[in-house]
Image (cartoon, rainbow, N blue to C red; front, side, top):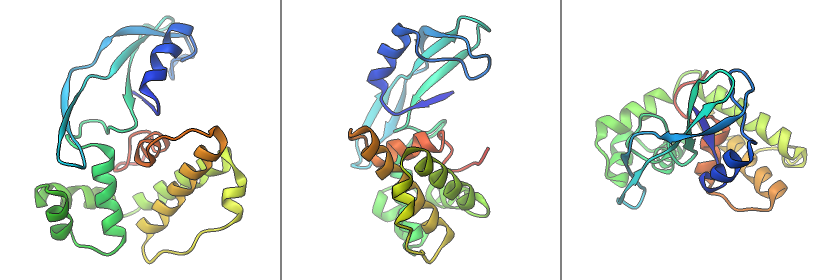
Length: 190
């Protein structure tokens, strides 16, 4: 699986032979689509998505090119889960977050548990790493300490989003970029 920021650009990149296989470095070519699935959005609507698949010309392996706005095997968009994590970092409980998002409490509780423990430290490292690669000036300003490790991680990821937007002078959704920076792993570190 490869997480991409701009799904429309993927078609152009595949046709030009720009995308490479993460396993062997071979050129990726278009190869059908993944299964369609409904994904719930933050506004309560549902959008059906069907991610592009690609096949390596070298090793013949396949990859799903998943938009950063989606997470693997999740029925909710990245921005929905991100909103829950942000609310948790601000001190809200899982019942209140579930009510605000209109999601089952057990689902929200499972998201928050999966993003606890040592995982916020991993998210923080991803944010710092991407911000440093994109624009070190963003890091020079420093971050205000947050009351929780999850809050610190989200601030670091927000800095990486700011660095990306500053470097490329293009707008992409913040949670879409965070999905790319974390390689679709808002819950589980590598």
